[in-house]
Length: 192
Image (tube, rainbow, N blue to C red; front, side, top):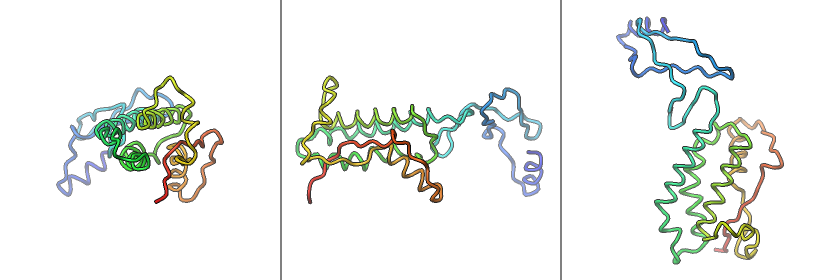
């Protein structure tokens, strides 16, 4: 940090200590560690919002997933009038859902570390969205499987999109897809 400060001062660039943060990312908890700029200590933080992504010391992205689900839920609630409209077909509602809500939900998905908890949260939220659109109460659990096959076809869910996006972003290095992570959810498929 001293070299950066030294060379930046040669070009009359100053480092703002109030805006500079320190975060040590490690599997083990590191309590000591201090950074100084011009003999002023830099503030150490446990999590930081960088380019609309929440980064924390442990490298776990639970906060990021919760934030994306909250953004997608607020988008859905703002546009709920369209989803409850009787004038729109189910096909249009599902396309709007995939366009507006899923784009907020899956923003930055390639940087997420996948685990079973993350997949369960995404699956639960996706099921919540479909139940709200189809007006299915929570006490009828099997109705999503018993839909009319002529009206609905099966399309990939958020989890499969996650694995496809992740493998595409890793320069064609294929990520092994566990069999239990590929699941299909309903979406309308009407002929044009």
